Image 1 (cartoon, rainbow over the protein chains, first blue to last red):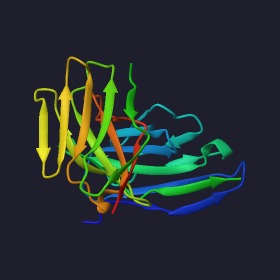
Image 2: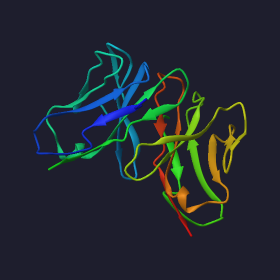
Image 3: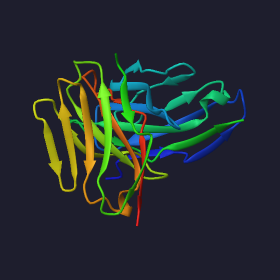
Image 4: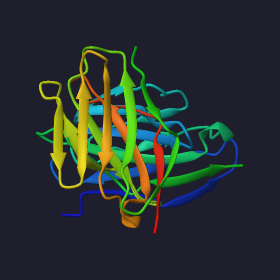
Length: 111
Length: 112
């Protein structure tokens, strides 16, 4: 069981560029989440999904998009990168219990 | 009403001492209160959690104290060790798709 995996680990983007952050889980969890972590701010929910084909906005969705075509994958898309999107991004999944399992994160810098 | 406020922002404790981190919430619909531990360069991992039907939960050196009337809960780390040095986040959820509301985090440093 690899758990929740994220790629890439690090990325530097120029303003206006686009990219997709990948997230995969092998625990057959229905619920998946994307958070961003900024210093002193905790983790903020960007988008979440309760199952394949179903997504919904979290607290800070502007500038991001998601899709959930399979149970395993939940990619996060940045269309026009802005410096305000410099952050560490975490993907998480939730199974039948209450514990969310987090991936190792993607550190993104937009310059 | 969705906020979870956490304090202190940083904490320095001597080895063997007690570390105490506090959180307060406003939404009375919250019914699950986990604490996550995060080491540098890693994702958060569940440390311990409590539901509001009990006032205390202990797992090894880690204890959650919960005060429903005050809408506060705290993490106590007994006999703190240098290996406990990490960032700790409290969180809360009200069963709305499992969405967690996180506190701001506390950076704990345990000095040998």
